[in-house]
Image (cartoon, rainbow, N blue to C red):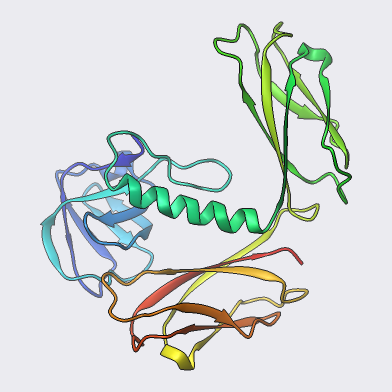
Length: 267
């Protein structure tokens, strides 16, 4: 299961402290995991785990004060994009799936994608032609076995990466099983990612400092509302992008709700 759900919690508006009952957080929960009260459309990152019955959120809890409520903490994540791993018994899986899709959508906007298939050739390896000449070799490759019930594929490695090809090897004796491959190239380097939070200010907008000066303003920004049950935020836009800041506007009258932002830079 990708979530820890045991017990109940007390949450207090304006406080980062969450108190648990019949919980074993020291054993099952880690810093960076995601906390969510059931039925509330807000996710909070865990900043620390002082005890089995207390966690500290990275920001103050913005929802209503409640006692003895159900909750869940996402504890299993994919290794690269840090997406929530979703399992059949997980709560609110549709909500977490949507969050994952938003992250993937933003990531794919910041990268060029190539894909294809091949057949394993053991330790000799098989050379895969990307089908394009990239500007470098600092791309990522994912390999997925597509043959049902493969026998002795062994460990899979991607080696000898060049700007137009790479080699896939497997340590086992299997030289007949097939695989799919995906190359993700972010302009020949990993995209730089920055993040932070802010408060809406209506059509006037709020200027968000990035914290660094980028090489240009060709970047993507994703905005996620973090206030539970916001009222009249309206449509959200990112405008006046500069190398060191951007402006977030909302068409509604809400000037108290908060948001998180993620910036992916390909300059």
